[in-house]
Image 1: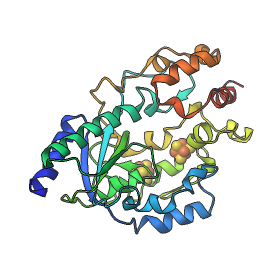
Image 2: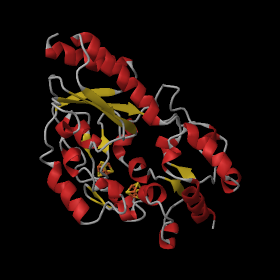
Image 3: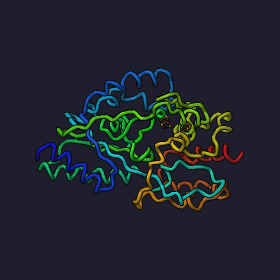
Image 4: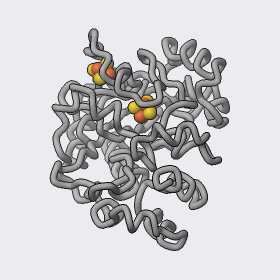
Length: 308
Ligand code: SF4
Ligand code: SF4
């Protein structure tokens, strides 16, 4: 099949599978991102996320992840909930991405279906791999290159039509396709995210993970410094403040799928349920949701910071 036609078909099928947008870029060295990543690591702004230092070359070049890779197909999947869904008053705040089913599983299933469809169209499955937060892939950089949005001053991808509450996934594959290009940066003179960040973790287009509540409550495996405890503004797992204040999120539309509908721990857990949460209950809720990045000890210490 002609590559223009196939690229078009990939986008249509991706949308039929429930992805909001699909874009394609050439698999090549991430020239622009390389010096920024290097400086960020050198300045220690990745905190204790040791894994960010590993596979430096692979992170910047998808051909080192998939032999002979020619294309990166990027997808975004909206998880913005209906406004009627809210956590009960006073409950420790959980980042919206962790309200529903574990996105790794949901997105991977859909990406594998898209990958199979490509195999059917070309007659054999081209060499490739599917990624959802699972390997050293700079997903925001690839989505930007594929024209799905720009990377805002809060370092998240923003779609002019959809805001920034979405998951990102990729298929890296050994198949030449038709490539999209990046779009303009529409942040302009706005600094709302930087001004709203309670821990001063942001400078334009740069995040210091050491100060970010998402890092402190999820990625940092030990308990956070008590000084940060006063700045959490109620967040016990992740933080959405810089996205909530971004004017582009007025374009966010609630998703229509069942997968990311809020689970019981969001709708039914009030402050009392969270305060009395025990290891057994936490393990149960972790099984389905994307809150699986933290162990019970860490969650317990986050909750302690909120309820002290
Ligand atoms: S997620 Fe929260 S703490 Fe982290 S940069 Fe955004 S506003 Fe600041
Ligand atoms: S809040 Fe303003 S500066 Fe920050 S990402 Fe959104 S548009 Fe850009």
